[in-house]
Amino acid sequence: MSTKKYTLIEGAYLEDILRQPRALHDTFESLAVSEPLRTLARELKDQCFRRIILTGMGSSLYALYPLSLRLNSRGQTALLVETSELVHYLEPLIAPESLLVAVSQSGQSAEMIRLIEKNDGRAKIVAITNTADSPLSQHAYATLLTHAGPEYSVSAKTYVTALMAIEFAGSILDGNGSDAILLDLAEAEGRAADYLAAWRDHVIALADLLGGIKRLFLVGRGRSLAAAKTGALILKESAKFHAEGMSSAAFRHGPMEMVNDETLVAIFEGEDATRDLNHKLLSDIKSQGGRAELIGQNSTHPALRLFSVTETIRPILEILPVQMMTLALNARTGTEAGRFDFATKITRVE
Image (cartoon, rainbow, N blue to C red; front, side, top):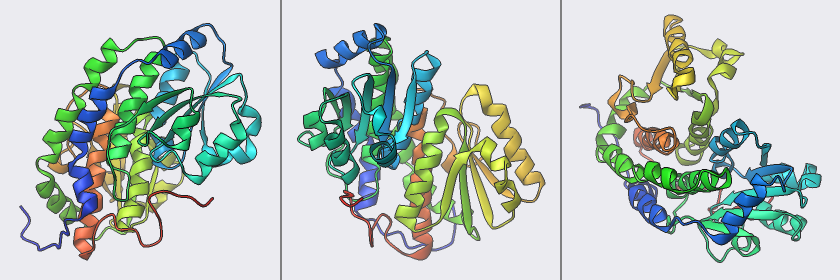
């Protein structure tokens, strides 16, 4: 245990983080196959749609990345498109032959309102949202509600519950049914609770680890890109600390030149197919005098070590150590994590 003194302000953002297991439990209990979702699964099987458009803003968009991999690997044409780009530059994709899967915790951000207006009933929408009476939910053909409850600022509960609902929706849409996916998702609450039980130790240990760090990269491959991208975003939002999220491969194409003792590269270990490549990146950075740590089941750092779990729930657990990093950086500066100075919880201005 560190002997250094840090000022950890236990505010509303921390409360949201610690309530994530409960939010996962409540969302899991609500998951059910609605008739509209069942109908869409049949229509996809019958090739009634030319493409699936996966859309959202910020962490809502990044949460859709695992689903884009899932659908495309099974022969569907699934496009991951930021909602702002979709409504302003790719409007022809908003058409009856497209199925839209839209994720928004509020369901009423400026971009989602514009999407609803642009769509005007042309394309069927699957909405994944935390707000039952939102415009997005009201205009959707099928809605999956997360049950994260009110959230203070930075997406924490809404992000992990969105990942859960997206996994469930994906299993139904690609024709796999609900039994197997529910068996996998049932483990998420307990695993998250087990990791967060030692949250204070994690924060203090990571505050030590982040000493002297001025730049932070979060990198991974495959489904881990959801946590890499979202993690970089919440580090900026919560700790006002600049971070970049990218693929491990992209890091070698230029950012490798930034390796030094003031730059930390946090590498998501990820799945079997590319785990060795991520381990090799870790080794190469360290051999060049840089600082790098693994986030995954084989991490040597307890605060970054994850349980061995299925690919379905790994993205849910991968964000937890990054949340601890946000708290650790704020503890180092004696500021409250997650307190917005300029942003708002619902972005109503484009």
